[in-house]
Image 1: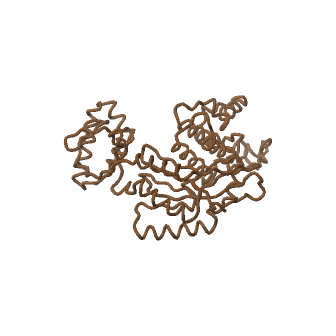
Image 2 (image 1 turned 120 degrees about the vertical axis):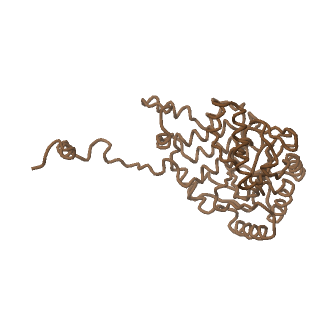
Image 3 (image 1 turned 90 degrees about the horizontal axis):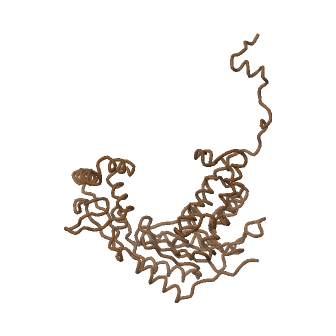
Length: 389
């Protein structure tokens, strides 16, 4: 039986909005020449040392085209001071060629630089994002089911359309209420994507890979007009992604690979350090799949990446995707942060919308499973062991 979907009240929505606005990162554009690197944890601006996260320092290396692996080897050989000198040398060379502008993102609560992006990024504030999204939520009478924000500046709003119910033909349990996800991140800007809520268990799923995904980095008139047209087209189809039924049927009829299963398991474990590997086996039973191969005389720990992609898991892609969304939407044990649950819904959606599942191209028919195409004499001839008369 389909479950009813709970939507947020105006009070709950406004509270979530206030939290997202309070998580807004400070955005500062600066030229490379305006700061010096002290070490891999600090840079100096106007004589003041500011802490830099590992992620942000990695982004700085990327801006200077210094591979992370090379930086690690360089540090091992010459120490952190040697790396500082290398970074300063590369920065000076970059400044001489073209004094590049970058965008620093600073967490106001910790005063740490959390990211270093190209100029012009992170231009849409969370407050503008919510004001912008609210207009469309009201215009299309959407019900908000989930709002989240992360300490890294991102926000997400999942909504359902009151009349957007869709059933996959021939699959009685696959009934969805369709809708929209509004998302704002420093790296990708403001995006809108289809959102699906599976009514049999209220699993939510969205994806940045749906063909209907649309993004904009600034709220100028041209972008807004194009966005309005995009929303009209989405609403005309009930916010249903093109080819959704075929995608779900294909996922239902295709075995997930061990590689896909490992990716799903990693996504669950990365939501929170408290998440227990044994506990999540109820959602993604990777341990059982691995044991099945061991009992058959093969150790998946020795498989290459290609072998992991070719190894069937005994679980369909669709069941695996639902394992992720069920944990994201309904698990009560860990009370994971809303932002991480929203990210998990996106991961599930991106797996579902892959161009090709790992085992999709494997043929089920093997006419040579128990015999060879060549007779022994033919094989001897092919090898040159005998000469034809």
